[in-house]
Amino acid sequence: MSEKNHDGKRAARERLAVEREKQKHTEKRRRALIVGASIVCVLGLAAVVGVLAVNAGRNKGEKAGPVVAPSGAQGKDSLAIPIGKDGAKSTLIIWEDVRCPACQAFEIAYRPTLHALADSGKLRIEYHLVRLIDGNLGGTGSLRGANALACAQDIAKFRDYHDVLYANQPKETDDAYADNTKLIDLAGKVGGLKTPAFQKCVEDGIHDSWVNKSQKAFQSGGFTGTPTVLLGGKNIAQDQTMTPAKLKQMVETAARG
Image (cartoon, rainbow, N blue to C red):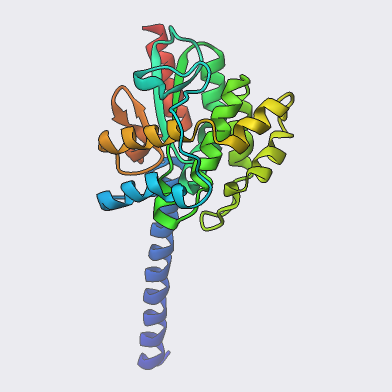
């Protein structure tokens, strides 16, 4: 083999090794983002974005009115929608935006575990609904979707409808959930939800002001993006080592303790 050919093959091997290392790093980062739920829809945006998020809908379909909390809402200012047993040893606090793809990624990865832990009485979940993406990208899909979820809570169908909205979530740039008709049609996938009362609640924006109040609480809490998932005061959405199995172990250990 000539020296020239030898050098050429060595250079090719080195380029291939570099490319493989890049691919390995990219795949590792992708798994960490999805499985660890460390991605967020909004990161470190200026405070003006939060203000826009609250006010954006007023120019497009939002009906100003009194703050009406959904049935069964709890916590400070009745901003939390609870799932699971009140006496559970562990409480998971989730701040989410129904239009947020990172929230969907968290749901896909963790939903079966959260359902099982809540149903077993070991975990209580408190959902807080916000509208960050409305302010970031424009539109009212976050607001309309959150209002519809609150309307579903009024009929004790929150969890099932919550699952349906995330399963059918449009692309982040597609403000499809701004259409009340779409939200009402999706309610048909949940038995007993698509009722005249639910439809009126959605169309009238009964819980719009409540959603905006939740958005303000999110801002004042100093959170930086969705999903924010708090367990024992720590945001596990920022923990790249967190997995559904690890969360399950933590909750079950607390339940035994």
